[in-house]
Length: 464
Image (cartoon, rainbow, N blue to C red; front, top):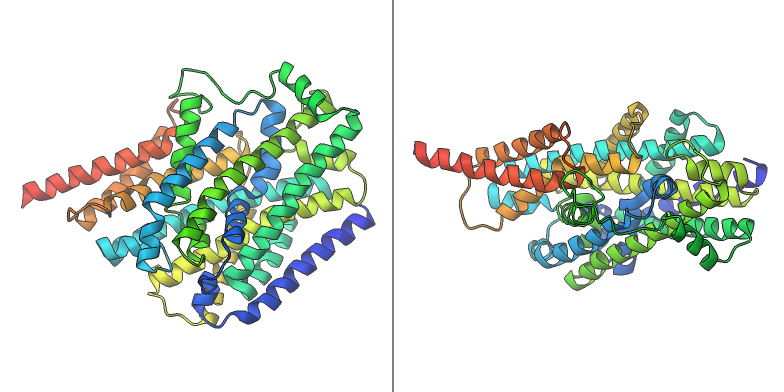
């Protein structure tokens, strides 16, 4: 990086930190810290959802997917929209009716505190592992652009994010998410126009060239829907279940809507985020496809296609803006994760009612653990974005089943529910050794969980 790039990055990091500190002056209680006084505008909540879920994985891995293949990844986004509609219909009303701080309180009121704690612990485990992968994705691109070691990249991002998250709470997190979302989306758009100017092509001409090369295919007609995760039925169904789970039973995502003024605004934020994710994926897939044209299709290291393009081709200043976008993507997810982990811990394990100072101390502890985990993660043979989705698939089926069972009128034994949750996760782990596509993991975990609960209930009734 040149001096101008360093100045841009420094100004961005300092400005972010200062904003968090100033915003934090409005927090008076843990309720303000975790829910923003339930006064968050739905548009801000919507952008925060998008920024939190896609994060740096979008910036790093999705252009690489388009570079190496086509646009079939968009099939997942179609499923995302459907999943959010289901969340808005079946889950959000219950959350607002109960007036909760943590969504796992719904489980506690139905099945008792122990099952509430078990559900919350499952969420906590999922978040720290999945966000460790997101940290890795951040370090990959920052290392490629700056030459810094992965550990230094993680520590810089972690410390800055920790500072503004501890100071400002959820209100700062969602506003910063919105700003960061706009910043890194603009980064993708800037990349597109820069490449077109270098290729001396109109966008229509580039799209025609890519289409003729088969690089823009979205619908995958493969009939092997159980083994090919990108077959249309597998991808859309998997995306729908993933979104239903992640945005319906993962507290980090739902927390944004809980801060909205009412159910109607929460629904707008939830469903609108699905359409914005589709647009965002399209932008970064197009960037990856255009890089393919620019590079002539030469083989590049996996998940470093965009990073190498930034390093080798962008001029000073523009390179700094793009890196600020990368840091924005990373920090939005990390800040959201820290606040959600602390919120779930305070409400589900400590019974709520903690002071603002105690809430911040718990946030600090989770931030330290996330940074530590990120430092020990390593890359796999799969695209990083896929690894992140697979980790979530291990537990989402089990969590979703608990919320579905909470709507039944039947009395269920806590031991049956716990057995179902454990069986679902173990079953999904075993499925990783089979040819079954990962897009079916959530549905498999859901089915295993429900079946185990029913069998355990039958055994209880037989014994009695």
